Image 1 (cartoon, rainbow, N blue to C red):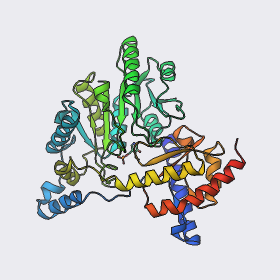
Image 2 (cartoon, rainbow, N blue to C red):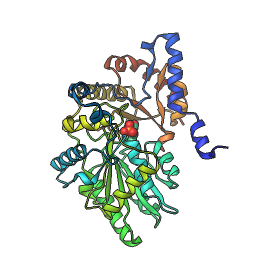
Image 3 (spheres, protein in one colour):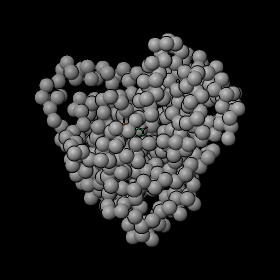
Length: 398
Ligand code: PLP
């Protein structure tokens, strides 16, 4: 016998994986250069040279036990201290090493905080469009996911709907800015209004309502857009961070949870994060990358190629006639399906070997997502396929 819900989750077809397989099969027929796969969110810029050089130096020079041994469960003290000092220097938040819990990326950071906050009948609010894994993480923690519909076309936050859907069971609200899939950065104005609402409702319910700030794309921001540091706007914020995208290290698994000392019940929340991680089999994050981050904590990505792709694709799609969310951050564009249905659009775009992710999984079925972490040439060559799919989809507009 197996657990039914775990079985269903594991056996369920994964749309992005299916498209990946479809793309591979088509590549054999039409050639890989003629398949435009915009589905996977894998960084296309290489990890900064200093990151690789530091890892190589450590591999060559460091004592094996020191480099490959277990680290402390909460993370090496030097790594936690370096991360805290960097946060404090950038945002003046007074972060301390004792408030950082190092994880194997943002996904385990999120699962740890969700499990740490899980109470009977607990609810977690998400703002559409949202990263589809939240649903599985929250449900596995025994929480109910409550969705606030997308604020089309600006993709900020429908505060009135948040107000209507908050209940005494609301434990936390997950915010992801810059956003996957829309590339939106929530403005300070939006965050202040949300913070005021959560403060008001928290007082009414007699317990804090936390914001879980999921920030793997914090460093991927373009033009003059500014990403407010949410704990400075609303103190009951817990940050989940990852180096997967900012240092292009998704396969190496490094991130952290930051539980600010000034957030409500901070020591208890931190201990519950440690307990939740322990309970899910977390031993420690990879030792070598914890050591590398001490030296590379100030390294930021070179965004030039993402920015070039972003501008080319955004302008290219707008010229064809598509409606696209303003892409201030991350490496995705969220595009309105010309026929009003992301799933139906995919069926058309596949005929042009153009692979996109329908918006339904993100809580926004009339849109689709494209990830522009590709090479520039592929993006330019894909525009005729976008145009052909647009014209075909327009004919069946709903
Ligand atoms: N949160 C969001 C919004 C993401 O897009 C991703 C990965 O794509 C994650 C969390 C998980 O990131 P990680 O690779 O650090 O686990």
